[in-house]
Image (tube, rainbow, N blue to C red; front, side, top):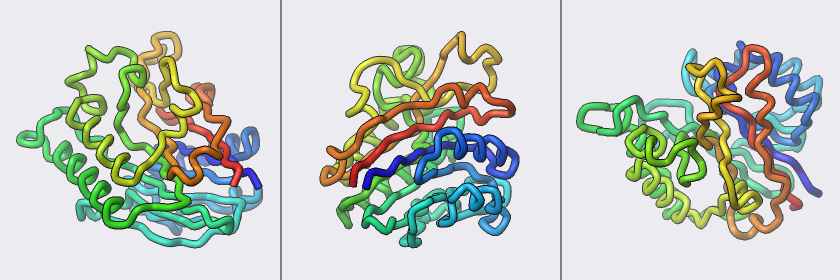
Length: 262
């Protein structure tokens, strides 16, 4: 049976509960993966989500920062939540659906402002996190798996509004792009979004600093949907629901969707 999945950095699930409910009502993904929930797991507002059919959840949370959750209409079991780079952050959770597909939901560290780990500890943490992700997938090759999340890297030239201007800006620097490529290669992951939409500018994030974000369109594709080769060919319908970025009190990210016929 096909199922549709969405990934969305919500920037506080409690503050933006109403637009999560709106997305559930209007787009109705079978599985919704959220990042930057900024909430302990027991404070995630489940009542409204459950009323719309999202009766299954796996999550890792902490007060005020980070946090990842997978909300699902399909029965799901909690299979892991790794603390890559031993940061003590809630940045990964994985759930196995009743159809046998495992979903990994990641919130990779943003990396701060300066792309130099000698002066910016956060950038070093980001590189270490990616290194540990790579090592994890090399040690245990994923099968029948989907990886989603805010990976905080826009890897391709057409994943940013201006490749040359952003080469020294955190999220598009060569060292980050190379590190993400190494993670992807370690798990033989297929970039499902770009397999479906191979050409053209494509963004999922627009800065809060730009009040005319839609007109200026200085975006980056920081949010990703990957799949292992055994199911990647069963994916279709990839899209970024850009209009969500313009909803009332929005996240600075728009949700990314894909459908899997598994």
